[in-house]
Image (tube, rainbow, N blue to C red; front, side, top):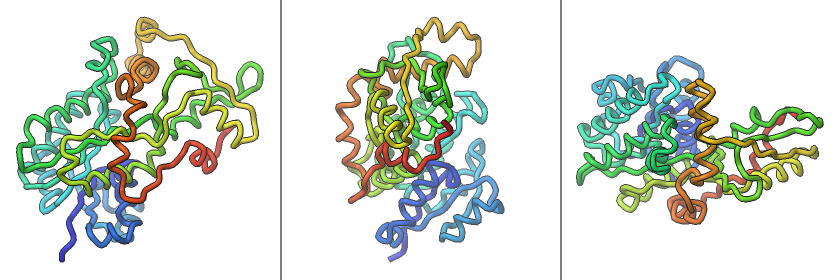
Length: 315
């Protein structure tokens, strides 16, 4: 029996690379799926490394739907992720996502897994209206649900807060010489969903492909572990053998807007989304089991402790 082609956009990046590895590192899945890796430059060492692992290399321009159609032709499944920060234009990202959806329909792809995010403006009833890199991806999700029809399965992977953000956020020394994480969260009550993005993305995305029709329309909370900020720094203190503290940084929507810096305001509102809406929506911390049902069979997610143990911390 011939293998099913899984086409992976962003194959040299975090999410695409994890999806690729989840297949190629699992003999059962590697026997079932052939990987087509979409890269910008197949001649680069990172792309050639994928080829050496058995992936087929291809190129695509997300702004050119004909290019996308050519890249995914013959695919059973497509994993797609876009990068808002390249253009910082939510309409541009929305159009790229629509091109992927329309190309999948045109090329009779069976299953699209779209890297999405919650619609922050709608979750917050308009209060958090500046988190464009969330809302543009959510807009693609809404579009896909409108147009997918009966022949295309579409599932959604919504990655949580990256554990890999933390090494640059924890300052080497505060005023008292103690390493400090300072964000607008409550140390004991804010629920923070975190993901080891490189390790755990593929456990969810490939699990969605495996689930097939059962995953149609489902949006996975891509979370490795939910924890409070105090638990985070306590874990890091235990792993590093050095004291690490959390300091709550007062912040309001109005204060975030005063910076006049678009990126700063967007990221500040992102932190408020975590504090006030549990990132995925109020009460999302109680619903993680619904998403974990879609993990690849036998998969075990990373804990923050495991991530911390394999990470070099500069404090």
